[in-house]
Length: 110
Length: 113
Image 1 (tube, rainbow over the protein chains, first blue to last red):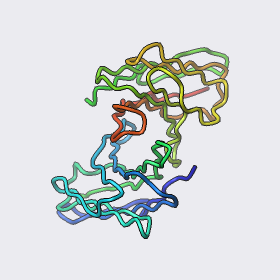
Image 2: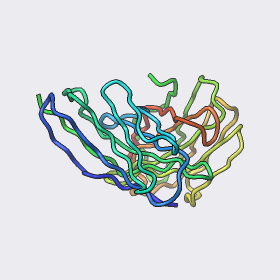
Image 3: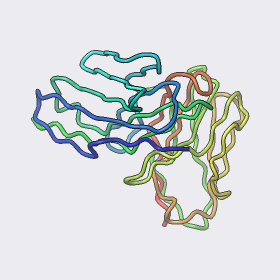
Image 4: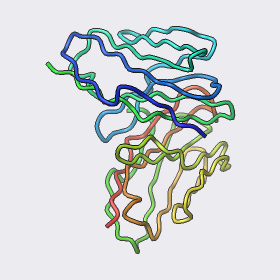
């Protein structure tokens, strides 16, 4: 079983700027999901993109998926201090296992 | 609140103790999961239950023993743990095994001394 890889490991930006996080994987997937985790707490599901989709939006979030490159990106536009958290990609392998990446720590400075 | 509740939120136990972590969901989900989150490591899937049957056991040491008495409750029984078992233990549920999104509890922060 593989683990996802995310970059950057950490990202620090000013409030109002956009934040982009990337995720890569190695095998075929059913879908890819992004989760958010505030320090020491549970994960909250943000958005899911299926393997036959290329882009999806939800509020200030934009997710892209490139299955040929086996990669996805999460863009948070007009960031706020409250967006400070860790962000994880998770992909559903065929065989129904949800595998998480190591995460990107985002800090938004006000 | 995600609808998944874990207790206790914090637990400190000695290596010879026996304790249990509890997870409860009233979302009507059929699948429940235990994950381990250690510092600077990706989440590790430990166990998966679907319709109260264990469907995944990722080479977890026998000092961790899961129990799923019904579709709403999941336990993780702990005994003779090691300091390296200290971590955040997260419970999650989903409508069905392998379907869409997972809903996570707030986790139990476990410290083994």
